[in-house]
Image (cartoon, rainbow, N blue to C red; front, side, top):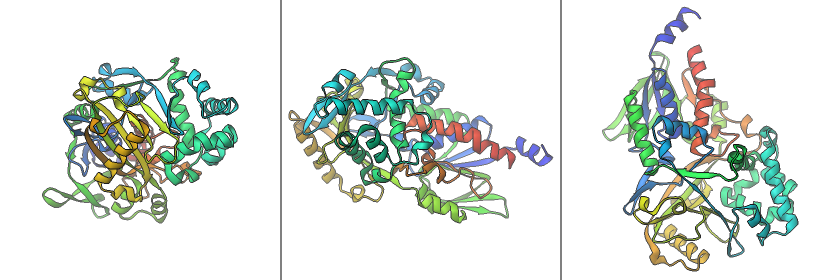
Length: 454
């Protein structure tokens, strides 16, 4: 190593991490462990991003639904470091299916055989598709074929039309037509993760207090290691100052406009926001960021005085139902953790440009209550003790054909700038564990080695 690099190895750099979600927090943690000087910027008043909590009624819980499967090794490793893993309460869950106006249980092989929507041949092809997908290892080949074509090939046209297509439309909207087959492979792999570890069924767990408690503990952990947190600070412009060999941050906070200088920058924001914020990127980088399409979500939380169907997830295949599914968090959480209430999430995934993201909460709430009334005959609106809706415009990048080849590189064309967001996920589903795995791989294999070499 030459003297320049040797001196750099001993120098403490000023790093700015933009985005206080689990990805940004994970990167900040890695840098702090290596003795770097780290400032984290986030436009919110607390850390967490999509994992952050809020108060609904008298209950503080997650704005968007999250659960910890037993097989989430990266998340559980973090929880162990925070001394929270031993507090997880594990529950075996059930899965429901709402099809042709009726609710069906689909939580075991026997229930699949009794499932009235498909005949025996169709059920065999459905089970065979899932089993075959669980054995596939080369996900890159699946990027070359659409999810629709692959599922028809293995499940058959009729099974696809009855089961797969409505599920894809619920999750992806019209974007399912340009989504690659690795998308469904990743879901199947996650489903089988526990079975490969020797368990017959997956267990889901939660930390008492939800992510509010996890994030509070993580914030204390990072603060003790020296993290500087700039809350309520919206970064408007990030530009290279060649004269100082540094980066200039222009941001807005409660005190007005301000600016700071940093040696290194890691952007963890969604691709459209990076494109708008960072100045000086190459034409190729700008094109790749602009070409990354996202799904957003409108997610309504309800506190009820009693359960609905008792399933953790109820998948919906009826095209007239205006939500993606029903998530009964109350089927996992003990009532005493929710003040005696029963928590339900009603998510609706939409294109990031969908007008539903601008819809009034009154209209959204009325439709959600009407939907529950149509799906569950025993449901009455007066059972609702509290209702709130959270929205996020950029949740998941849509994995189009040849997606991994068209992503924007982590190491940018500009010295000291790294672009790392959840759009880098190609062989997994979007969840907290997968985001933490992304931090492990991209930081240790890409960001840190490049920084040391620079």
